[in-house]
Length: 201
Ligand SMILES: [Fe+2]
Image (cartoon, rainbow, N blue to C red; front, side, top):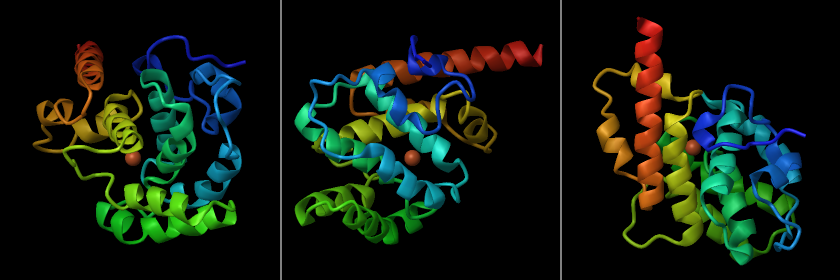
């Protein structure tokens, strides 16, 4: 069975299963946790839409793996957190599309999953605001937000941002809410820059 044994930054392309849900134990999933939702089915429903985004559904899998690896998700918030992560980029490639189309698309998928109205509203609210930086976000929002920032420093995504003119990594490393995420982002940035200089020499 594939196992993620090091920090998320150690992942290499294809090292992380795109449909990571059969490997939940690798990400710290324990049978004792509450698990009401069929995450694999949810991902299957979202995947065709996510694949239209620049980074595809692989980005979604990476964000979820980072969340499970680096943050403790309260058992009672696991469904909300995982659903928000799986659906966060569902509306399209741009933030505008994600905000305008994402909540209703997320709601439609969750309705197919038989989720109740209150749950759907909570997930949709996160999907429609996940690039915002509220002062006191919910735990699911914060875990998604921090993981969605850390993933930018992954080997698979770093160079795409790094090649943008004027892109300021120093601003990105300070965005996460948790100190753990900030520290990990800085460490991953050093690693990516080291790899870059090694390749250039
Ligand atoms: Fe994302």
